[in-house]
Image 1 (cartoon, rainbow, N blue to C red):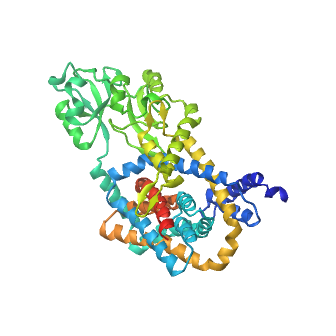
Image 2: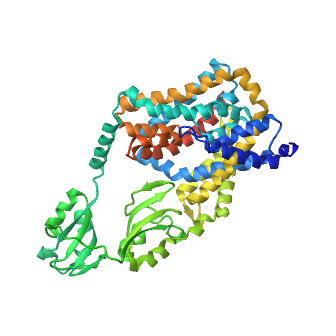
Image 3: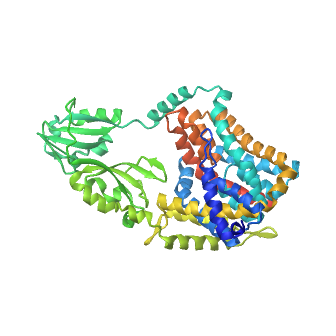
Length: 528
């Protein structure tokens, strides 16, 4: 058994056992990677302690990867949803922090312990990292470990049954949401039209200005028996059939400009394909589809973008990011040119470039060391705050010269999981030495405080979101799970609905909430 006391052997034993335990699912609920900290508690209780450098390296990798992933969404959330959803997120995290502050005095709980409870109740491991870095105490991880399991279960139960409390019909809310989407963003449909207007005979699509006059796109042309993907220079002649994509309202203008609608179909042809391409070419990063002249130069149209696990509907001015998966519709003849344009090299994306990662981390460490005069003392962002701030900003910038700051999805996940495993193992073993004593002295009080911090912020935000903001219930649920940074809770409601409304709200709120929890963790550690 002595071999397990060796920190390097214990490190990988804890990780292996923790991952195995985390995969155990009961009624669809599992601890996932967070199970590692509970196994580390056990090892720590029996005297295993990790070298401090493991915790620091794990913290740096974890926080940097979190910031890189959250950066674009964090800044976009202010532009797109800087009102109701952001306010709700601030209410959840802010009220949780206030309850933490009050509980600390009411139950006389040590500040290091109660800050950990705050991060566990809101199921935020990045918040725990900030708490430990600010308090310099293993008690924060004990508080996290006590509050986290109930935090996960509590959020799941809340979002599954809150509709009963509000007396909301989920199916009606889903139908209402779909109607709102159609009103705000009319569905794109395609119809075929016969070229009958003499004024357009012999003129190119560019000369007719179909795009600017009708807000539609011509995706296919049938000339005689030949079907092809048009360019702006394609000439329309009498009797041609064109397939046009646009909203129901916009397509009515096509009849006036071109001619009547027809039921005659245009074959896609063997040479027309729809295919995903991976952005691995550094030259196209931060450029828009207009700048690349995707349609005019390559006869291609981007239909969707998969970015950081989220589907994005692109427009002409959408900027491309490294690692994007772009769905392209084009002719087979243009496939090679489009592939060369985007790179489409999975190997490049899988190979993590540590040069920009190292430079970004160095910048973050230096930023965290900057001392800002504040009253009689000084304020520093510290390691966590500095690395987080630098990664958020660099992720938003995307590219500087030949340096690509964004990290492709798989590589970022690998860096994030590696950092998280090292961090949880180290803080868990350090906390394990005191965990039994702490639970025996404060056990039930800590559980009560954790439950309060989990439930009451969601309850307050639900009342405000439903009765004052009149949010659609599906959007409200997504905002709540995002504010609590709870992916398991988001997954738990998938079986109840078909709409992606909760996922959209979650994606918009999560980055803001994640950063806010980190900030409040540091603030609580300073003022308690």
